[in-house]
Length: 47
Image (cartoon, rainbow, N blue to C red; front, side):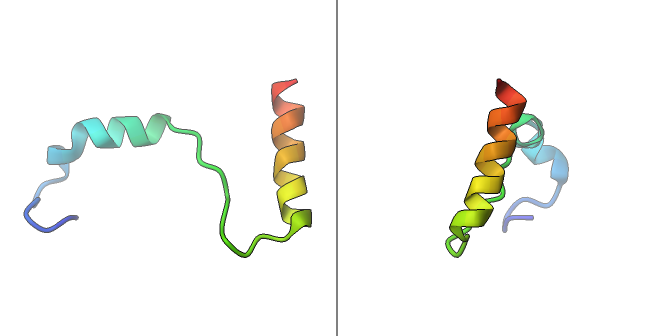
């Protein structure tokens, strides 16, 4: 936990928001092939 925050309950709003977010597997060294896989999966899911 962050310095100055000793209990997880102090982050209840942040924890709730974090659990509702959509997390994409992105990083600086992704190949175009990896990007195409991710965008393809997203496209198929949302069409």
